[in-house]
Image (cartoon, rainbow, N blue to C red; front, side, top):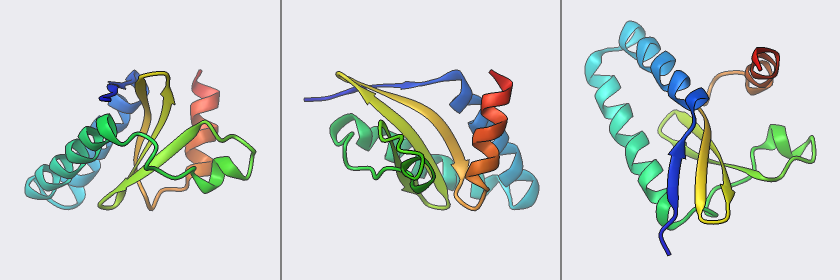
Length: 108
């Protein structure tokens, strides 16, 4: 069974921020490589949505409906509902997830 993948607006903003960060601090070539890996990871979610692990930061809060996959130096945090995968966050794995989640909550 193939799942539908939906990239939410919040994840699209994350992707734009990540692109700027990588281009500014590394190179356009690095961005293209990173983007290619992200697309492959997202495509894999269509067939294996439960392959990801529960993010440790969320597991500590007893929030278990979200999962993550690591793509290079990035995390893709998503939720599976029925036959759809909703991508909520795409972020550099070295970022402080607690701060990111707090900012997200304040922004909504």
